[in-house]
Picture (cartoon, rainbow, N blue to C red):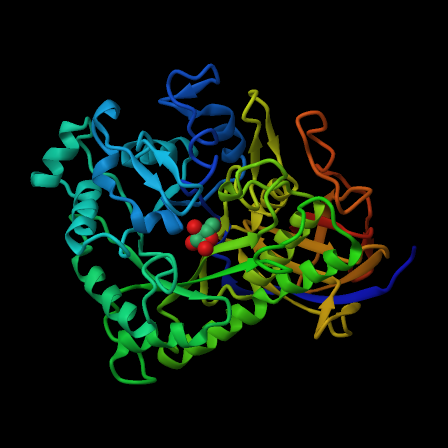
Length: 509
Ligand code: AHR
């Protein structure tokens, strides 16, 4: 069905802030089958692996240019004691993962295995330290163990475990959700703790830590304010010598209630729109936290990190409720596309974002079958792949002078057309989504300050919003070459079928 033509003005010669590649970051927790049975199958597995790390998963994820991987949690981080996860595996003590399924954790995947995984993926580690049930000394030792050169007690321990050279670790989380599973603290109490922990997370030798204070949930701007206040001591004034370099926030796309979040695959059009409206509110969340930060840090030296985001549905029937295993449909892919457009818009403050989680948990890139070697790429995986050209590109502002077509969803107006653009190495990349479940739309890209030559386009869509990939139909939702783009005198006209995500790339002429 024909829909509206949406004009969109893009100035190709007015480069905005750089889109930090780390907004395409990932998150892997000791939760369900993310690590064990997902990334890590053990050396004795029949599945091809290196040091127990599943090689087909590595190969698939390398195609995404993952910039960083957050580990070991999540809630698990605040009950994780890293010294239990080093040394000979047979000697590592077990523990109970009380947050996620009350299952036994044998600590076979620990610091060395995680760093090996990062090396295989070609990604930067983001370690989330234990504030909730750990100690300052324990966290300080971990930093020393990983990053110190020369000779010291922790360096000797690392060497005894087979690693001579220090690793380079930049991103360091000071706890996780300390308002909840990470210790149930008040904002003011945690802000002091963050300063204390940050003090003893030292920069060893050439390694400079980027310390990330555990931030708010959703719209809790008071939490961010408490963390920012602690950086200045002076009320709403410029930050001096920050003890932590960033504050985080978590925002999930959850509709319904905690008890009934809805099925990942069986949903109606109303559920779909409610999901999209909730996803789009990440704009409000980022704007709200950034506004608070601007008050204390107008120079924007402190980063905002959205280190957990994504859809959260009921677990798949018959699976462990504590394992958060869910399918992933075209709806999830469109949620990802909308998030990225909004992340690009916030490039001046948002330095990192991490989808929850990479394998087999929540809005995953990869689903593996516990019974077989099958590995499936999800629709969300494809959005990460189609969008990877935005990493470290200069953002280009997209102005919709008219209004995007929209739908009234509860109290929200959901814009059903979403566009973002960036420029890198003489090329421009446009990402366009049509969230309308039934109507197609057309976007008239009015390009100013330059033009584009030949373009290539790809589309991600399917006959139904509920479409998803399985071992039997691994490409039910997969990108395909797209010919729905044509030049106009002043730019490009892009046709967007209902519920579709399209990327268009070309050299700037
Ligand atoms: O990603 C799953 C959980 O969600 C994380 O462990 C926690 O930080 C959040 O509540």
